Length: 136
Image (cartoon, rainbow, N blue to C red):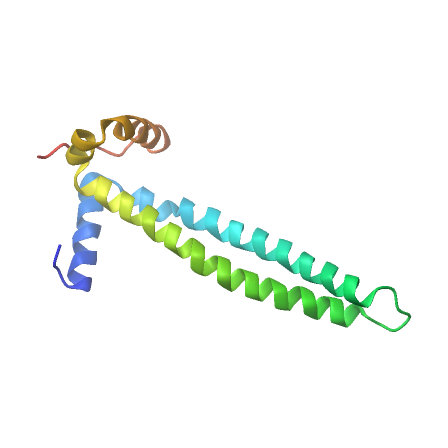
């Protein structure tokens, strides 16, 4: 709290190494899931762009395939950028929760015991080597 950016990052890395949580950083599961959500959403919106293009132009004898491809990629790109921006907020929130949980699990257990127990159980199951050191 109140540290410069680089120093704070080093402190977090030291914290994770001390607790044995480096596998959580290396796993990057949340990033992967959100990235595939971005791709799926963008592909869906791209497909909707093709359907809209087809609905506006209907059946024509001229070659409309290039216009369909263009409409897919334009819609895909716009949707990917927007969803990436929105889901980046979610990813940042998850990272914040992980750092806060690593830094002070005792306070989390004290103030939110109903959330602490399932979170600790899930993390212990997913990462059996991590430790939950309680320091108050």
